[in-house]
Amino acid sequence: MVSLRELSDDEVEELLGAYALDACEPDETAAIEAALARRPDLALEAARLASVAAWLGAAEAIEPPVRVRDGVLDGARARRHGPADPVVDVYLSLSERLGRTIDDLPADVFDVVTPNGLTAHDLVVHMAAQESLLAQNLGTPTIDDLREEEIVLRTEALLPRFAGRALDDAVALWRDSVEANRSWAVANPDRTVVWQGLGLTRDDTLLVRAFEAWVHTEDLQHACGLPGTPPETRHLTLMSALASRILPVALAVADRTHDGRTARLVLTGPGGGDWLVPLGVGDAAEGPDVTVTADVVDWCRLVGARVAPEELRVVIDGDQALGRDVVAAAPALATL
Image 1 (cartoon, rainbow, N blue to C red):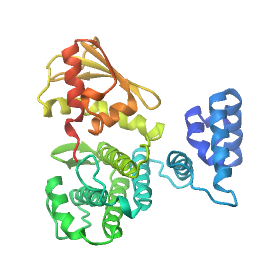
Image 2: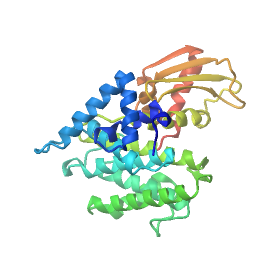
Image 3: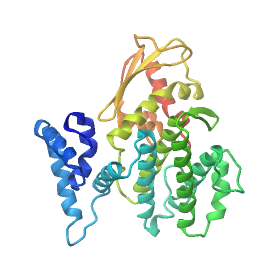
Image 4: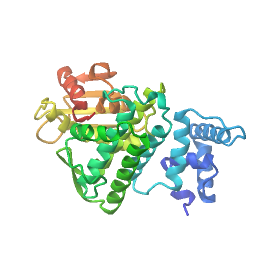
C-alpha cells in the first residue's frame, strides 16, 4: 500500500490515468487528491482525463483521438499491468502502442509508402525482422531458418515470405519476438548485448528497440493521415538520455569527431534534459565549446532520421561549425 508521504509528484503524474478510471487504491487516491490541491496543472490534467474516461464509457461508443486514447490506456496499463522495471516498461509500452497502431491499420493503407521507403505492410515485416534479430542475438530465436544479421538483408529475406499473406502472420512473429526479448530482459538485468555491431547494456538495447517502435508507430500514423504521437514524459526521459549517450558514437560513425571538444546538449520540454557530451576521445570538459538547444521530441525525431538536420529548429551558441556537426551526426545510427 502506498502512503501519502511516499507518493512523489512524479508518481502522481504517472497515476493520473488510473485515477481518471477510478482504479487507484484508497491511499493512492488520497495522495493524488492532496497533490491536485496544490498543483493546478495536475488538477487540470486529471479533469481532462476524467472527462475522456467518461467519454470512453458513454453508452454510445465514440472512437477518441489516437493521442488521447493512448494517453489514457498507457497510463492505466502502466499502473495495473506494467512492469516495475522502467526500461522494460518503455520497451513494452511503446511496443504495445505500435501493436495497437498496426491493429487499427485500414487495408487501404497497406500499400502506402512510409518514410523509409517500405510500404506500411512491409514496415511491419521490417519490425518483425528487427525484433526477431534481437531474439536471435539473445539466444532465444523466434524463426529457426533465418540467421541473417544485417538488418536490411534480413528484412529483404523476410519480405517474400509474407508477400500475399495476411498481415497477422508478420504481426505474430513480431509479437512472439517482443515477448521473447521481454522474458530475456527480465531474467538478465545486468547483461550486455551485441546489437548492430555495438556492445550495449541490456537497458540501452531495450531503449534502442523502444525508440524504433515509436519511430515506426509515427510512420504508420502518418500513413493513415494522422499526426504522430510523442512518447509519454517518463519514456521521453529515458529516450532523451539515451540520445545523449550515443551521440559520441554517432559522431564517430559520421566521421565528425572532435577530440578534446565538448558540447552541451539541452533538450527542452517534458522529458528533456541537459548533458555535457564529449565529441571525441576523452571525458567531457566542464566548459562546453558549444551549446545545442532543441525541443526534446524534435531531437528524438532527428535521431530517428524523421527530421532532417537542416529542418531541425535548433539554437547553437558558441562554435557554430561544431554545433552543425553535432546536429548532422545525431541520426547516424538510425536504421530503416
